[in-house]
Image (cartoon, rainbow, N blue to C red; front, top):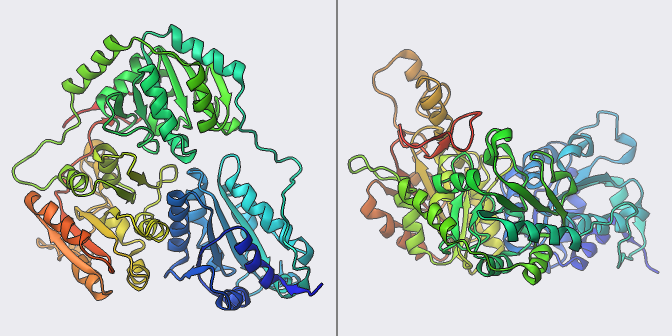
Length: 572
């Protein structure tokens, strides 16, 4: 049998795993892998402009396609630039396999040029990480990496590839099966526990479904919608769970939590059974733990055993894949009389509707999101992190044809633009709309080069309030309006005490145009849809639309820090 190098085996393995797109940035320790990729034509190689953007692109590619995202970077700084993206994917359960170059084995531990212990650095933010020390182990490790990334609770896997191992000749065989001792993820539903949960629902007067990101990750949206329609039980979602059921569904209430709608938070406060699926119960949705859902028995379905009763004690734990559990629920669940309960929830919605107050003729963030809703009946929305993210989570219409992606658990500024690129590469026939702030946009703005050269007609909506808005909001409400380190016009002129601050830097429209993209600036509500339709008409280049908004706009409702869900700031 003819032997082949580890570099050739890696490329063969990628093809065997069905990889059609790889996001890579070259270096000395991966140049031979790049050479092998150059010789083939089945795998499309995307060259971003920064490794952090690269991993976010692979992340959004994975979220939006259901495939495993694949990265290739060199050793040292190439590998360490992946860290934020790995943590982002780990928090949000995104399947990635990231290959990092490494110095030759005899140099490891000797402080060689561009040598770092990337497996050690990322141990706590990956599902699994390993350095390949022997050529004969390479095929098995790659096979296991893809299996671990996509099975059970999905997550990122890092495979570190020493240069000499990859150059060594060995067997061309790639394993067909995986058998990992000690890793046997269970997705089967415990029917006894499920029946206990159904019994609780049957006796409930005010039942409530809480859908988290796990419903979306499992692709359980259709089954969950059927379950809601069969039981007639209202639904609230986490931000990551938005879209678990269409947001225009009559039984959908809204998001709950720190910036959740009044009706959603009150429903959690008043329900007597909270049936949660695929959520970690993190602090952004619970407020004070002891006061969360104070009147409710809690059921929790999650694929991760460690997530159950980690933050909130639950009465009926069910370890299972969300889709399998929901489909089984359909066999046992019964219709509930929830008319009075729904009337109470509708009453809360009318008492405090989710609506921004208009002051004069200012362009509101709500106007922008509603413009997107109007122009795009289908597509993919990708947000960055900040106020604009919460506005999108509050006002975006998410249906079977429209999906929403963001960095939820880690809250990574700089995710939005590369995320949009990854989503568009994975879904070339769908509109992709990026919603970003002026702060987050600048963290990976170099990716305009990637988007232009890949001919990706992404629509990039930048909500420019000249501040780091979410931190400024806290400073406005809780820090006596001391806007420390949040004014993006600040610099030498401000320190000198000049009365007139400089113009905003950069000029987003000119910057987009300098890359070969299109740029539009919008100041008035009546121009929102016109700009979006003009951007949608582009077929080969991205369009950046800069929306100038008032920095005084605040995301309401807002749960006070260390407060309960009842302690919401509605206006100020």
